[in-house]
Image 1 (cartoon, one colour):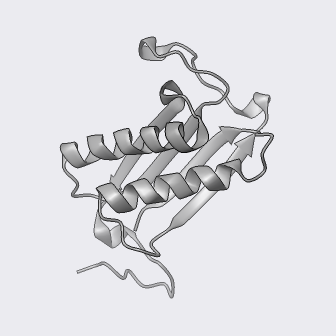
Image 2: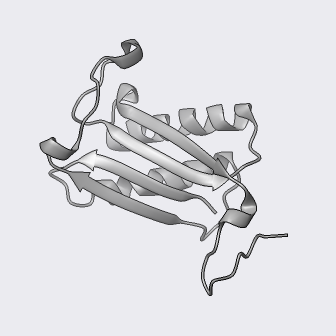
Length: 127
């Protein structure tokens, strides 16, 4: 049930954003139990005027290869599961796509299950 948003600076490889999304989905599947086929992503590329970040916030050196990842998901994961998810996403992007660990920025947005409608105007997970 996660909705993943990925924002990157315009990349020379037109398939790069899709490949980032594939790594994120694989990490979610293996670490927090996201089911097969539960893959919903919005992948966006931006020019230099629409991609703003602080290159040193919290002492982390960031570059224009920064990958912003926002995952909206149902609440209920433990802090340990979240930490494992962050680590696994960063490591997969580093290993598979040569994204620096410092350039992986992740934000989780947790919502109650009744806040989802996957179609037909129905809250499929509402109790």
